[in-house]
Image 1 (cartoon, rainbow, N blue to C red):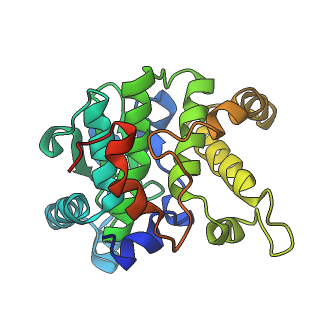
Image 2 (cartoon, helix red, strand yellow):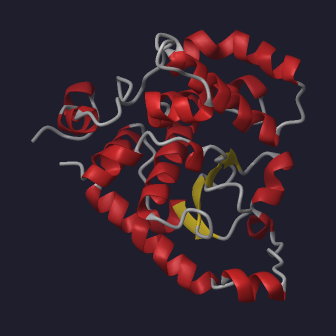
Length: 256
């Protein structure tokens, strides 16, 4: 059964709003150590904010990753889906805890087929859970459809799917300003659009017009593609538990 912590945070909003692709040239500065550089920290930030404890952060992050894999039905399901699609995850090979820019919590490096969890910004189990789930959707898209993340339409489609399946709920849409109590019908779609556009524009040199044109081209198809979950997860519901129990009915995992 899913813990209350995972139920509450699997569709949480702003904390996970900036997960990006690592293979995009414009996004390299988000993950400097991945390309051989180092994050520089002033002595002031080290003393005042306790930054620079990379080894401690890494151990804590890796422990949270293992706990999420062991305890979260959503993460277990996504692992099963990736395995069924031919992309079984070895945590030691395909998930890496690293220091990143503070504005991101994670990313997917399609060149190395590796998920990065940002150890210095995804510091709680809930944040690690959200980053893992988001990036596992990108990994699933890359494995299933050979998505080309350098293609804006492909990138935007995967961001739409990750926002749709993992993050957007009524509460997160309220926080993002895309919903109100008297305008519920389309709030989920607007949350997905805003989140996906923000992520793509963070790593692509696009005008708002160019980004909106791409959104118009791909939104309907990508929003309606609910694989591998098969449904949108409602906040504070038992949807995640149902998805995990019924996974073998849809070809993911093995029947008990």
